[in-house]
Length: 301
View 1 (cartoon, rainbow, N blue to C red):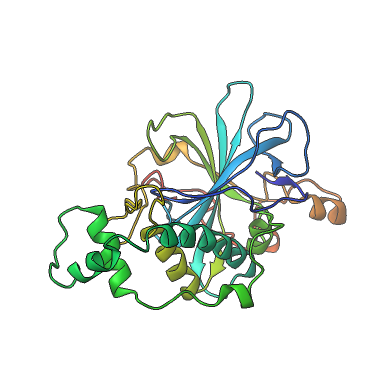
View 2 (cartoon, rainbow, N blue to C red):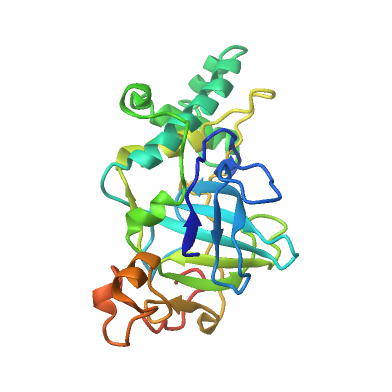
């Protein structure tokens, strides 16, 4: 995926799911600059709308054995029944990310709605029980209460320091990586029914997030309560992860897209060429490594 359409996108439809923080977009039948759209290198030959983007902690993908703090997956639906594309941005711990914080702030509002609705009816007694029993029996409610009880610090004051909600473009993370190149493979959905209909595109260079932002995302995801039932919704395990385990596969089915395949539109206009020559990758790519992928795990790219 290397050509996004830039428009007036927003953070209007948010949902804290059991395994992710999801931003959904309405289905539209024609080009609409209120819904993110992009083409994806798969021969589909047109711009397709993003159905939703979601954040997961930690990342479900690794790069050459390196793990990452989080990832964002954006799902692009192919109307002709030819599957769907998913582009993935990985996040490593580093600088504070203003764009990411805008989304975190919006999700905090959703989290607070559930917390306010469940602030009565024995909620305090449940928290006190955490100090009495300290074992992990697979109970998601127990894990959520334990995480909440051992991470008692409040959220950072996002309302004062961040722009919360409003206009927000997921493609800006691509520009943060300064890379248009990726690993690609045909795989499955990362949640049931796990259908093998997905063309995955995992960008080869991560964006950055701060440790405070990671902790905020964990608190929102791991301690969210359904306002109707007051049950905790997260399925995170004792390792504080909602990521799907790495899936074994043949590494030969993974392709590595580099500047030898294409360069950005801006580079094309400036240089008057469509790709780079072999041996010059360092001049064109921020991550000119692993140009010929070796065998390994499917998602250990």
